[in-house]
Image (cartoon, rainbow, N blue to C red; front, top):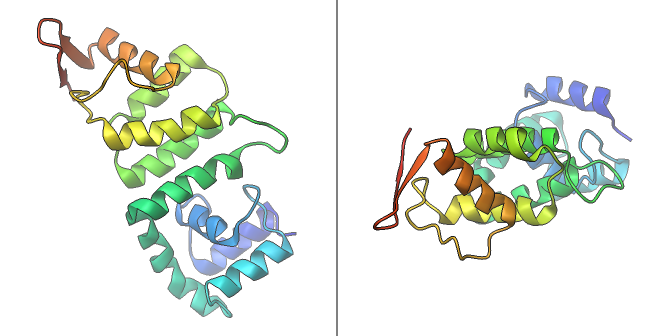
Length: 188
């Protein structure tokens, strides 16, 4: 089993910060079940699937793995994988502080302008663990609904937490809704 200390040494050898998002992509390729852990089988199988048989080849593959985040389908797979990977063993939900850290990491890559507001909203109003449904639906919300919310449908099938987030944005004056025409505008 390779644990935190071993992964830190690996990152040093790869010249990658352990908190770099590429380490999530590495874990995804290795099908690691848990954050900060690789079983011997996960590690060996993952390296073989990537065609890596030396530290030099591993370093060379880092840029390829980083580029995979730009592919929308792979990003979605990595995003959905991150939920199970980051949650505590035996838990169904993801701890709020862990979820916020993961969203900040993932959406820094995808550049969703509302991520900081989302995290502030959760800390101010939710302060509970995040369900898999909310985790999955947030990516769809970020992908489909424009930051000004002009195409947001309050009758849509979003989890209640996302609907409450939209209400929070209007209450805080971040998003303004014109009650006459139902037009939305976004203040940066």
